[in-house]
Length: 416
Ligand code: ATP
Ligand code: MG
Image: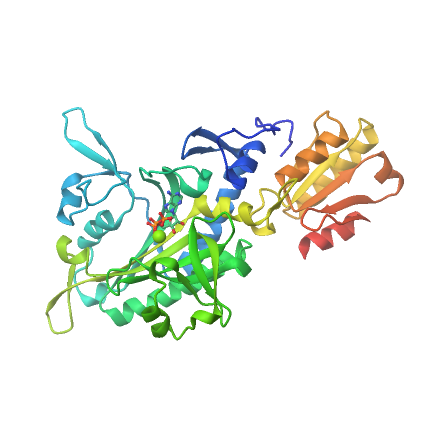
């Protein structure tokens, strides 16, 4: 992609009301546009990153047997009354609106009810189970505080998966597979070392859930990390009883701030029972399906990657989610430089390596500042100087190390 074609531009200042590092940088670099508090549009560079995260999550969900659907945002109140989740006194973050005829309609903040009703049409016997269904979908939540950019949106992209099993043994087996898939996803996007599976409240079946928390000073949550084995406990459930149950010792626990990037729940029959999602077992007895739900905030994850991977100059994208693997910076208007840069782009394209190609007429200083802000992992400079040296100038955004190398050496490095 030629940078001169990109309609977005970088800017020096972020909106004064943004406090989070990720929101400031994503806005300044032109990845997102702030519509209003908690409401962000994704711009071309943001979409590229979001698509990479979605692809990583999708692959992991397919690998554990997930089937992808795309449900609607508009929700029928009658469905939600069945489970007593329509009343604003019970659920305080609904966005509700009205049809022309004055009947109410809701914008989904989650999809247990909707999917359970769909599954009722297809699950009849134990032979139809287990099933695992997921989607990537915009969720609407009327959050009280929306001050942390994409970390807490009022409209945001979530991956939500729901498991339908015949009993708790099957639920628990799948739950562990989902947890392992989550751990792998966070590692792939560059958060492996800072993400902890965290014992938390909120489950229905067991009263507890597992959160995936990224240790980060800007996080809203407080968790306690064990120095032994990496276990973590959310402050909400940090009691002597729970610690004893988990075999943890208070003296080994360290308090840290963290961002919740995922949450998995054992729902049991909370939704299947009121909504009548049952199956007949081997003996012909009707039983409610046992469910679980598994969420990842895609927008929050994208912002969290930047909360963790940034410096004073800008963002530092991990390779797996970077908008492009290579940022080519052309310097000067020498036709030989242009020809060499074009050749490099072609050589990379031949190997499927996409490039953000800074072909703009701008000072080297401005180009370098923009490159650091955008945070593509590898920056390659082609200039009169590099041509004279018959090499490319290659900078590693993460370490700041600059090296002169040939095109074959660059290709080898990008392959690694
Ligand atoms: P939180 O405790 O942060 O309010 P939650 O427990 O209500 O979130 P879930 O309903 O479990 O969240 O949603 C699954 C995932 O969606 C969360 O783990 C989080 O990563 C993401 N998420 C939840 N609320 C938001 C939001 N307002 N903006 C962005 N992502 C969100
Ligand atoms: Mg939560």
